[in-house]
Image 1 (cartoon, one colour):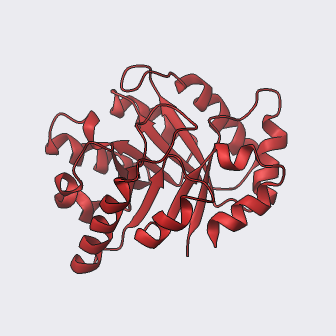
Image 2 (cartoon, helix red, strand yellow):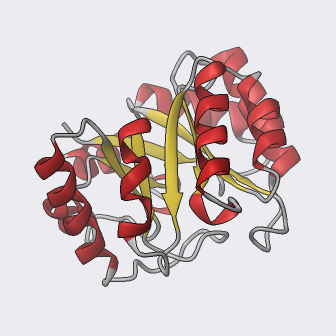
Length: 219
């Protein structure tokens, strides 16, 4: 079944409680927490996302899906583990080598959390094949990370299909999550390619009825 992870990146200040409770009532599967440090990507949302995720934890029991777009992965794992997320995803490109990739995977598991690994559009999916048996989710960025409201890069559909084929051939139990430019037009394409977790922010938060758009994306 397809799940929806709603990005709160574009949540309006002053409307946090209303938005979070509205998304919960609309039955989003996860709150997607976009953590950026102003270094790995241009935008810096680090402290705001710590604040938002702590607030979510106080008023909602829905799982959090933390996406780290940061250079200092180890510190971010430590900081965001405190909010007890369901999953923490880090970027393959933020690691200096495969040993460090495995260190971060084990660190996240040590914090009783599922592990996700993410790749940018320019990174070949084959580069992470050897670490897939150790993670729960592979997050394919379908836009350049760091900005909301971008258009999905259509070449990424092939990457999703390639990953899905590999996972099936190797009999791996891994979720394929996609993030970037997901809306009612692009969702059917990524789902058909093999994605089963869709990250959407702008498409949901700008809708007059969260439930209608979430249900449509999930179909």
